Image 1 (cartoon, one colour):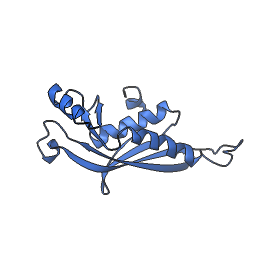
Image 2: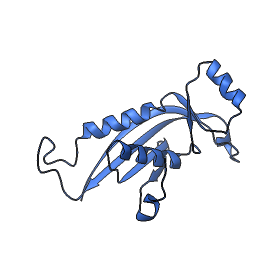
Image 3: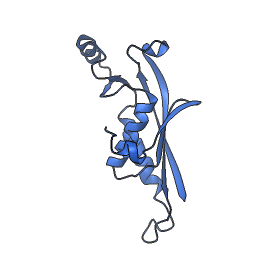
Length: 149
């Protein structure tokens, strides 16, 4: 089995509505996303001969996806009062509303599925909130049929 990994990072704020701990408060992270691609065989023809895939393509996909959150406030749709969203927009803040709770786990799933939509078949995606804390997402037969963006 062959495997390769690529990373991208972004800076963003988030909060977890109704969380009993400190994460209920607005705070930021230097997020890192790492994606792994696996295959039993390497390409045998063309410019990617002898490769699983070109690192540049995977890195570019990750970079473009991470850019959607870079220097933004990621928040779950409906978790803020409409007046708060309006006030933040009026102040010129960059907002990234998402239809899920913005945890590392949910972001890992989002990146996994977004890579799939770009034609990359990841084996696993990790999202680091800090250098020592990360969550991962990968699909099994059970969750592949139930997973939604």
